[in-house]
Length: 163
Image (cartoon, rainbow, N blue to C red; front, top):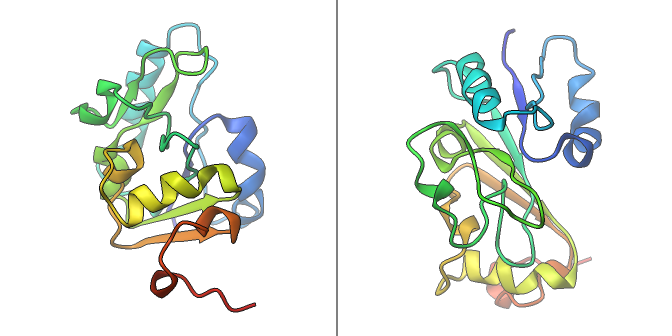
């Protein structure tokens, strides 16, 4: 099996969350070269390694401002025609990211969220009404794993609150 898991975001934050999945030698991973001196050149080179086959799964988080995958609010990176791009300065750093184009082409998306500070963004994404970067993530074949605090603003009918 030559399927791959790609890790979205800063490797030191995401890498440990999927390490167990990568223990299976049938899977492979190519970490984004997010520390390269030239992110523009590195993003083009990285995009070339991805090819045209859809990714199996993309793992995402959500920030309290509704950003995901280094798609800051108001940044044009969400409209990029490329699979990998560089966003503007966000939280003090310029970042390489997968774009909505390749994230939504993946066979599946896994979104992991925790904390009360994310509740407004999660409600804005799932209930709507707000233009948040995470709203660019296709919901079909997307699994959200969130704690109670992160789902606190969602309507009761949308969340199973048992347990």
